[in-house]
Structure formats: structure tokens, C-alpha cells
Amino acid sequence: MKVTIFGKGNMGQSIGKNFELAGNQVEYFGSSDRAEKLGDLVIMAVPFGALESIANQYKDELKGKIVIDISNPLNFDTWDELVVPADSSAAQLLQSWLPDSKVVKGFNTTFAATLQSGKIGDLPTTVLLAGDDQEAKGTIKEALAGSPLRVFDAGALKRARELEATGFLQMTLAASEQIAWTGGFGIVE
Amino acid sequence: MKVTIFGKGNMGQSIGKNFELAGNQVEYFGSSDRAEKLGDLVIMAVPFGALESIANQYKDELKGKIVIDISNPLNFDTWDELVVPADSSAAQLLQSWLPDSKVVKGFNTTFAATLQSGKIGDLPTTVLLAGDDQEAKGTIKEALAGSPLRVFDAGALKRARELEATGFLQMTLAASEQIAWTGGFGIVE
Image 1 (cartoon, chains in turn brown, orange):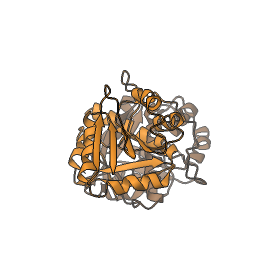
Image 2 (cartoon, one colour):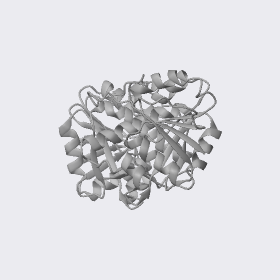
Image 3 (cartoon, chains in turn cyan, yellow):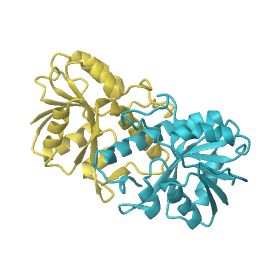
């Protein structure tokens, strides 16, 4: 499968590594690149603030494609709130900006280090996906089948609210040094 | 320390067990009991729907006391939303009903079985506390110091929103049988 990743940072690379390990072809684009021929799976590994302009720029090319939003839309000045409306989420906003794409929330509850290692403590790193297109989530799960990551279905796209709240909570625990950025929420079956 | 628990169900008993293990004196009251002489620490181990009437009934006795809200205010008909306002939480509502008490959110991200065993997989069961009164959270942590539970500070009471979202998410993973009710989010340091 061809995977396009917007964002060359830690998160983009750590996610891309897993898709590569699973045998997919991964292409990265930075903020100064003009991406050509997007893959069927497009990952927005950029800060929340950059999502809308990328969505607008590539709206036509993203039609019909699976678009993964990994953002944690924190107010990074205060670390005390999310900047999205309380009854919505970054992923739901992205879906509104890309009505003809299949938006899936994922990878926002896994720190980069746990995506790199494929482990969180002794547990496999688990990616939680929320999205309204069941087939899209299945495609992502299949594409990752050869990676160390475990993939769970967190439900409809509206569950992105809870995924973003969980991501936020986990980040505050790390920022307050109660956990390390190599730790966080491991999922016990 | 004297601990009063409203609610004799699984959660109440599993929480109470840990306070007892740590050497505290625990008293339980069911819905048909009239509680006398409340402890300094009062745990509301009741469904969200029962919180307001208990708060009203014991408003005077609860003045100045630490009151722990453990509820997960799901819509249990749909399992698709919380029944509290999106920009608030059960704990913040309880604080508004008990303005003179020190409300702390906690124990809502730990399934009863993991409170009973003190473990989630190979990890210690971790209780996340959110509340505006730093001393109150410290008192709870101290009271549990002889139990198997680990206690982390999740921040101000407004973080109850994220705790309730995380509890909700965890419950949907169990309800969809992707995890067991003996599993869930373990916290790796």
C-alpha cells in the first residue's frame, strides 16, 4: 500500500516506520514540499494548527482517500485546555474540511517513543482508531498487520473526542513528570 | 482515617477494600440507609443519576469534607455519549451541588476487578485524581499508601472531563470485547 505522510517530525517518522515494517511504501512531505500523487492512505502528522490549510490545499487530491488525523489539539501556552469546541474534536473538524475523504482519528494516544519501539513497558503499543468508515479502519489495521503495533477499533468518528481527551490527559501526566515520554497508557486485554 | 462509602456495589466494595488494606476504617451505606456521622473522606460509589439527591440530602454534613466522585456518566441506553454537558463533567456538577466540600474525581478509570486485585496485567493499578484542593488529593494518596494502588495527580477538577472521557473510552473497549473487564488502561511510568 502507498502511504503519504505530511510531516517529517518524530511522530510522522515513528508512524511511518511501522507502515514500512509492515511492507508498505511510505513517502514523507514537509511543510515546504508540494506533494504529488498522494497514496491511498494519507497521514496528517502535523500540529493541529496546520491541519486546515493542508486540508484546503489538497482537498481535491484527498477525495475518496483515507486521511488519518493524529493531532492533540492542546493549548500549548496553558496546557490546561483543548483548543477545539468541547462538543467536537480535531478529527471531526478535519472531516468537515474534507467532507469527501474518510477521516480516521488515530496514533494520538501513543507517544512517539512507544511507536518507535512497538512496546510500552512489556505491552504491545496499541493504536486506537475512531472513524465512521468501517472499511477505512479495516484497511489501516491490515496495512499495519506486519508491524509490532496492535490496532483496536474505538468506534465512530465522534469518539475522537474521547481519544483526544485521553491523549491530552496522558500528555499532562508526562509534562508533570509522573510518567516518562517513553511510557503512558498501555492497554491490557 | 474514617472513610464513608455511599454504595455497596462492586466499585464501592473494591475501593473500600483498598482503604481497609491501608489501615483505614471504612463504613458503607446503601440507598435505603440513613448515614450518621460521615467520615472525613466520603466516597460516592453510586451511579451518576443518584449523585444529586445524595448531595442534597447530606449537603450540611458534607461541608468541609473530601468527597470523591467515581462516576462514569454514560448514556447507558446508547453507549454513545456522556449525559453531562460537553464542557463540564459529573465531578464539576457535584462540586456545584456541594460548593463547601472538596470534590475530587477518581477511581473512574479503573475497573472494579483491577481495584480488587491491585494489578492490571503486570502493572500496579493506578488511580488518577483530579481536584482543585491539593491537600485533599494528598490526603487521599496518604490514606491509600498501605494499599497496592498507585495514585497519580491528574490536575485540577476541570481535568475530570478528561478522566471521564478516558473512563468512557475504556468502557466501550470492554463492551466491544476488545479488552476484558479485568483489563484496560495500565499506566507505564
